[in-house]
Amino acid sequence: MSEHRTPILVDPPRSENINSLLAGRLERFPDMAIIEVKTAEGAPWRSISAREFEAQVVAVAKGLVGMGVEPGDRVGIMSRTRYEWSLLDWSIWAAGAVPVPLYETSSAKQVQWILTDADVKHVVVETSAHAATIEQVRRKCPSLGEVLVLDEGGIDAIVARGADVADEEIARRRSLATLDSLSTIIYTSGTTGRPKGAELTHENFVTLCLNAIEKLPEVVGVPGRRTLLFMPLAHVFARFIGVLTVPANVVLGHTPDVGTLLPDLAAFKPTFILSVPRVFEKVYNSSEQKAIAGGKGKIFYWAAATAIAWSRAQDDGKVPPMLGLRHKIADALVLTKIRAALGGDARYAISGGAALGERLGHFYRGVGLSVLEGYGLTETTAPVSVNLPALTKIGTVGPPLPGAAVRVADDGELLVRGPQVFRGYHNNPEATAEAFEDGWFRTGDLGSVDADGYIRITGRKKELIVTAGGKNVAPAILEDRVRAHALVSQCVVVGDAKPFIAAMITLDAESLPTWLTARGKPELTLEQAMEDPDVLAAIDKAVTRANKAVSRAESIRKFRILPTDFTIANGYLTPSLKVKRSLVLEDFGDDVEALYDGVASPGTV
Image (cartoon, rainbow, N blue to C red; front, side):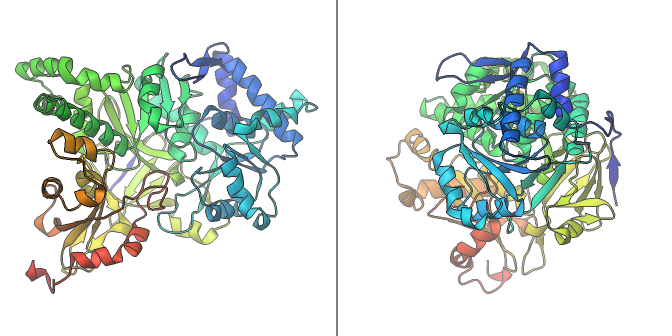
């Protein structure tokens, strides 16, 4: 059983809590920007100093007290990623209460479950539509009080309620929590059933943030660092970064609309980016298709190949002079444009949620953006591990952060312990007991740890496919590689108890028109594209390329294109863009069976 521990670097006093982080920022840099807010399209972003933010936090916290919020009460937040989300988070903590995030895409049934399970007292939502969703289930939520709407002056309404609350009351409440106290309840995205509420403590955030800053000074510990959040703040990944920016002296921005992401990146100019692999895939595929459409496809592919080769040479310790010259030319012709699309100043990106893949990892490093792939779950307050600028091993998720330890069980499951591990599931002692083994959290992920402590994730334990021939196949590596193709939106590998591995694939409606135009083909609907010989040939090539990463017994032998994509809106993707595999297999069971029609045994294929 392999195991690796990273010694803790910062061990804060037990009497501290999340509020201490904002107090420290205010003391160090009261008049420097802590957040910048988008005011209007094309207009300069407005800077908010730590002193101004503190005043707003206190005002909102007073309002919450005036509304009857007591220490330990739960207050819900249901919104896209915007400034008010962060303001509410810090204000709820200042009031001594516990914020409970709800995804703004949640159904009424999901909202009801979270509001009742967490015993939420009040909710702040973004829109009237969100308020209407809550009203659908209000009768089934006996503890629910007021619902305030951000777009209808919700913040001002809260502040008005605190006119008679003294500053001393907020100061008193801010000091109540210790590192052992509950800080938030974040509900898992529910890929395998009803969401479970992970109880995260003040220690989970405080100790993890301070140690991450100490371990990654190049990324978050240098003056002038900036990041723009566009991932949902209801998810632990963005939430952790939103807290981390405060003690790290980073300037934070928010953008709720991915449709304006590129212009927002250009205006805000982040120095590091937080994202998931699908976004990096989209940026690459979009750049590729634009180049092809402009008749510069060969130049793009040459530049991409050069970037990847240059990055691989970095790992070998020496870049041949001719490759270095090629890289400079490629940078001038192509790569600098990709950096510009990401704002121009970004040198690091933190990627999590799924495997990025070595090809894209090397490509972006060749572009000049070091993608530090990391690993974590809701139950670990996001990061367990992350690659380090001084030693990045592309294809791994890095070593454990300071204070954390990882162990690989005999069956290959990754076990974790450390200050970032949650204390248990809310109102669910049975699930909590199942989640731990001798004090180690059972992640449910399969992986390995090398001699340097760098972790490699190979798949989800529950998603492991066992074919009729007894072959164990982790689908993630195949799915990630197939999904890297510009035409592919999602890929679900199947084959459990079947004679061979197959795949269900959905087409990317955004990339399809550009792909067709670049090849001189007429416009096609998704239904027509499903049967188009050129589209099918392209998908077949993507599958063939993916199969090179595995043995023949593990390779995809057949695929089927589905008539609908998997999205958050239709319920097949979680808000963190993970496929709800069990739901897909249930609803598309006939399509799975069609892949094996006429196949009696492994020997028939």
